[in-house]
Length: 159
Image 1 (cartoon, one colour):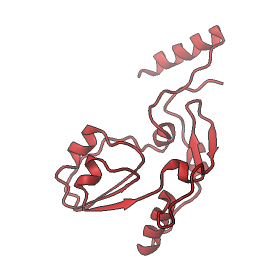
Image 2: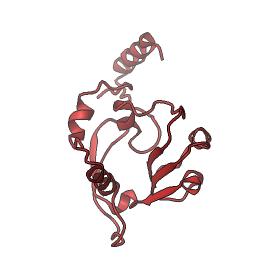
Image 3: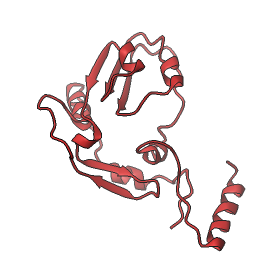
Image 4: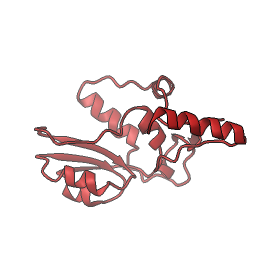
């Protein structure tokens, strides 16, 4: 969207005493946008693809773009067309089985608490990523608040 159009919408909202919120889509889509994770994916010679799907439903476009992946690992809460096509599926807890954070539509960081008891052998999304990082001898940056606050929002949020 053109920056002048956004500025005009913000100005109109201020004049009307209204509040603007982002309607980016599903859970944490504002965070994904802030971290520049919404880029289209194109399979371009990669020999392995890792999809951290969690509890999101994959889009038809994503499923189609990964159809010819030589080897695919999917980290997911639910079975889907993507996990059905995966070579390896890493099952994870559902969001209501974990404590954590999300960014609400109005841009505020919110906390979540577990509402259901976790099955003993299931891992959280964070535990899966930490175990993989350790196995690959990688150091994860856990300063997600710093990463989020360092970004300029791609959406207009007016308080």
